Image (cartoon, rainbow, N blue to C red; front, top):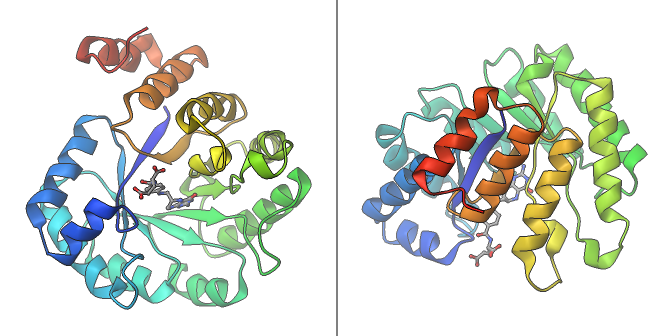
Length: 266
Ligand code: THG
């Protein structure tokens, strides 16, 4: 079944940033409850936007969210020190978002991750920057899976993020990441594929129709998780329907549940 990582607790969102700055726990808890109700499987927590405050903001967010939700958290930071601190705080095995092949980040993350019991999102990013072809994405994914394997991560604990890039800059960027997802899935059937989707539509009008069409295509290519807004009913309806059509929803249970609750309509 497709896993939804709810993206809303992110200080790059204006309302969340305000709530975090004012230590408005009520706002954060209400938002998290809405994401849970809408069908999130993980709650992403990103405190990166208030420069100089990430550590204390992340700490406050975890203290605020953890007692109020039974879902695992997806700890979202490029800073290994923030991730280590957050990891110590969580009671339920989290998802670490993320590790990459960028040397500084990689060198700090690998010793910390060794032997840990958690899931990890691995970005196909290295010191040369974003990947430039499907083969490039695959090569980076292989490197990440092999390296994580050596420190004890099973394929089923690894979520590869192939890094979706704007199609407005190059009309091939959609096919590139679709081909890469297929190649990764072909090589490692148990490795998961995840990522943010909204980059695909950057620079174009009516972005949400692009994002939700893209998620259906990506699911056919092997994507089985994404970092999205679960309160976006249309993308949720699309991915539940695609999951069902791809044979991933036994007895149409989630599809029918969505119809009954009113989140899926024609
Ligand atoms: N891969 C991984 N992690 C990620 C990303 C990714 N974490 C962060 C990000 N990308 C996914 N999270 C969000 C959270 C909020 C928003 C978008 C992505 C968001 N965007 C508003 C919009 O699209 O309208 C703009 C912000 C605003 O409200 O001003 O809300 O790719 N591994």
